[in-house]
Image 1 (cartoon, rainbow, N blue to C red):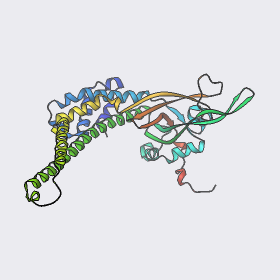
Image 2: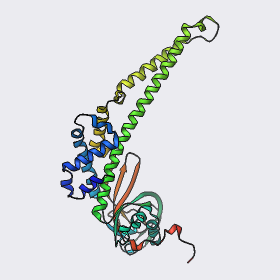
Image 3: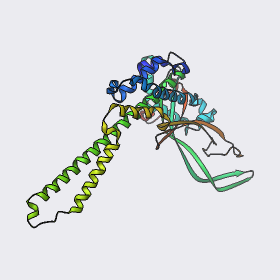
Image 4: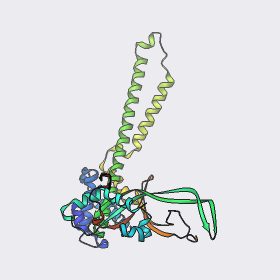
Length: 339
C-alpha cells in the first residue's frame, strides 16, 4: 500500500512532504486508481485533484502528529505510571492483551524484527463510562450511595507496529489517507447504487403503466370483471414522474466522469467530515472513578486521543513503546493449564 508514497514520505520532514510535487503526484495517482481509473480520461484531472489531495494528506499527517505518547507499556510501568495502569486491569491482563494481539505477533515474527529491543505502535481501546453509586471518604466520614462515574477500557488492540516512532506515525498517516480514499469510493458506489435503484423503479413503473393502458385498449374492457381503476393509473403516473425527476436531479444519473470527480473532490476537501481526532484528558483515581480537578480525592490525569469515524464509531488510543522481551512465548489464550 502506497509503496512509492511511503518512500517519499520517509525522505523528508512533514512540512516539506506536504508541499512536495512528487508526493502529491503519487497521492493523486493512488486516488484515481483507488476510486475510478477512468478518471484519467478527464482533462486536467491531476491538476483538479492536487488541492483536495494536499488537504487530505495534511489533515492525515496532522492527526498522526498530535497522537499522545509514546508511553512505555510493560510490567514495570503498570505499577509506576498511572497513565499505563489506567488502561489495564492487571499485569496479567496487560500480558494477555499483547500476547494475543495478532498484529503485534505478526510484526515481530518477521526476520528483520526478531531481535528488536523495543517497538512502537498505536494502542486502540474502547472507553466506557458507567454511572454508579459508590462510597466516598470525606475526612473521618464515609458516605455511601455517592453518585460516581467509573471509566473503563476494553477491546484493546495494536495498530501500526513499527521499529520507530516516526515509522509508526508514518504508517498511521498512510492509513488515514487510505481511509479517505475509501470514503470517496464509497460515495461513488452509493451514488451509482442509488441511480440504479431509481432506474429500476422507473422501468417497473413504466411497465405497470403500459400494462394498464394495454388492458384499457384491449378486450378486457368488453367483458365483465374488475373495473380498470383510473385513480390507480393516475397514481402510477405520479410515481413515474417523481422517479424521473429524481433521476434528473441525481448527478450520477448522467454517468459523467466529471460528476464522479466532483464527488471525490468534495470528500478529500473536507476530510474532517469523515473522521476526527482530538486530545483529551481524563482525571481518574486508581479504581477508575472519574474525578473533578478540584476533588480532594487522589487521582491522576490520563491523556489520550479520542477518534470519531463517521457518526457512530468511536475509540481512544495512545502511542506506545513496548519491549518484545515481555511478550509471552505463546499467546496466553493458547497456554496450557496448570503451573
